[in-house]
Amino acid sequence: MIKKRVLPIVGCAIMALVLILWVVYCLPKTFLSRVDAADVQCIRVFDSSDGSSFVIDEREDINAIVTRLQKTKMKRGKLSSNYDGFRFSLTFVGQDGEVLETLILNSADTIRKDPFFYETKDAGRGLDTDDEKLPFSELESMKGKYVK
Image (tube, rainbow, N blue to C red; front, side, top):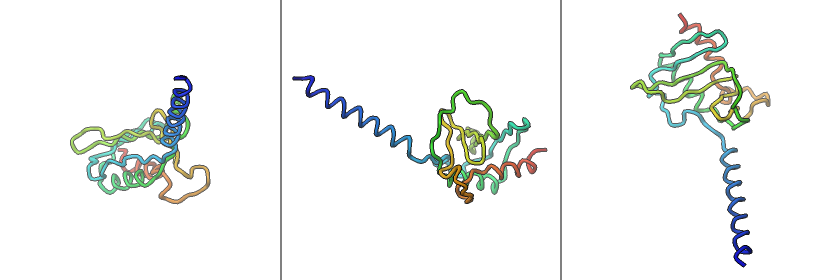
């Protein structure tokens, strides 16, 4: 008698848990959502294509990168474990020297933040609106400005 009552309750609880996990997985992710660009002192960048690193410390450039990342809605992709390689590693440093966030940009539409890859919501659909792209090309052009 007890088994007949418990089994539907357990089944419903499992289904509710699966539904909650699926909804959380599908929700768009926005990076740096709790960071104000004014609170970022500098952005440390490492370019793995040639091993160079540089520090972005001009307010206009910091604002442009932070704003672009905050505007870009990302969707969770496949697991990033057992994958090596990336293009840019970005470390956002606060006014008091603490690390606010570290992100890895794999390409113009992909961020790796373990344990997942995140892609722009319209990745692969050929949509080239500036609001849907990561600051990949900006970093490539800023590199010449900051690398000495």
